[in-house]
Image (tube, helix red, strand yellow):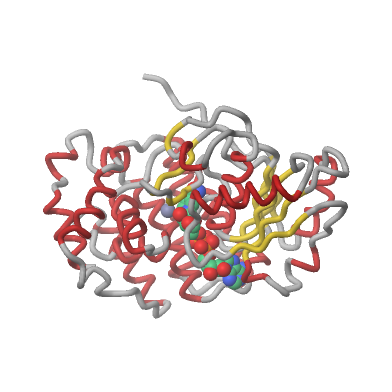
Length: 360
Ligand code: NAD
Ligand code: ZN
């Protein structure tokens, strides 16, 4: 047996207002005045002084707004890389991703594809990246995915929805400034927050669990309970704690794996374009059989915050469409092995998944 040698984010700043330090932090990383920093920023911040007026662009630095309406695609990564290469003579000094999981994943993928030949789809999988990425920085503006700590960047490609999992994927620098999450809409706050909660439940109830994952998972779960079930936190405390829950939840799955909700949510994402956070919620409600305590807690959280989850999204699907989702879900072997065990194929059949999808 060989143990994972897990790469971590090299540097991290935490604190309200710490985003002001971005300029000072990246300045020494500038290779020369022709090698720009490229800022990928969620377009929800267009014209919002919280972000834009605090970015100090110099020389040939470029700000590119990206939409997070849809989850990132490999073709979108390729287009961004082409745009950056065509616009600048020199290879960039770094990529700074400012946004949620969508923008952070794009930033990681772009940083990798600047130094690796071919197309992003060629690197979907495990350890296919050959050359180190350029310097890349993540600045989350919504908390829950753990994308700020993870070794992957989830992309939808022409054939599959799968991450670029590599030692070169994690950020070189992360800035955790909970103030940046102030404008998140309530439903979205819940969906992305539940991504973290589900990471904890799937990690803590999986067969891959070990003391490393457990220590992070338990802390993240405790934070989630405080944030989503207690009435004692101020808004600021709640923002601070959710940012750290996301980090710990990400660290927990880094050394274990996710489970049933994620496997099935990938199916919804691939076929219907349902986003990761809300997709996990849509699935998780129906998983009492696999995660009884977690589902009960989830329902209490949903009720407390009066959140509505889309229903009936599979009502009009045909056999082929169910088959596509089932194929995507079943292809994620490590997730099932973690959730169920080595004998998972005897437990999880196509009919099991079909019956679950039909409820959604
Ligand atoms: P997101 O990045 O898709 O953003 C969700 C919505 O919130 C968007 O409309 C965005 O504009 C808005 N938003 C973000 N910050 C805001 C702010 N401060 N104020 C107002 N609105 C704001 O959401 P997410 O849930 O963070 O990310 C989902 C993506 O993350 C998916 O693509 C998923 O595949 C990926 N993901 C990656 C990992 C990983 O380890 N790499 C893990 C989990 C999920
Ligand atoms: Zn997730």
